[in-house]
Image (cartoon, rainbow, N blue to C red; front, side, top):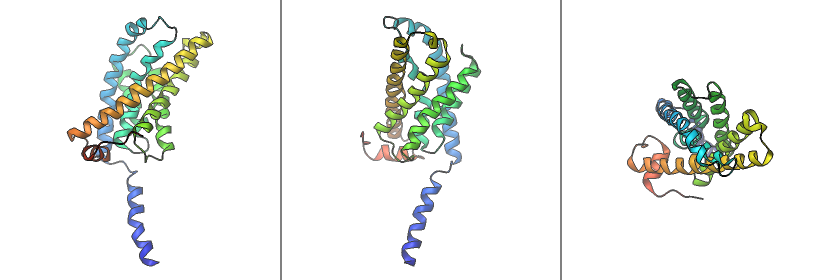
Length: 213
């Protein structure tokens, strides 16, 4: 009995330590957040002309929402620690807000809720499953968050139910594809270059093709 107890303690301690943030985790998550924030800002500039193209179906501009959701999913997939998705999404929101967006301080609120949308999904899988399906769900979770916010607390709230339904579904689809799928592919691509060698995501991606189920 004594041998069994002592042999399992290192494994348990290792699992507990895996949830602690290292300095490199903070640095890389911050870099992801800042870089994403610049992209968020640029995406905001492109939003008006791009949304005008999608006016042939009312509410379809929700397909653009994913351009502001990928930071949380990407950070979560790379860092693989509790709070990573929320942290990177909030940092990205703060950066884009400081650079200057038409939405002002609400950008921070949206970033916080969107980050939670992705974070909750990763937490449901106990930060232990990083396959494509989970990435897609995390993106969808962020999409649900932004769909709810936009159709409840913006000018979209005054529109008819059909418009809001199309917008909400479009936002979820956009989050799934732009935030979920593209972030997962980005992590795999970075892993193959060796850029993520300090992370489990990099070591897994460099050894063998990742499972997609």
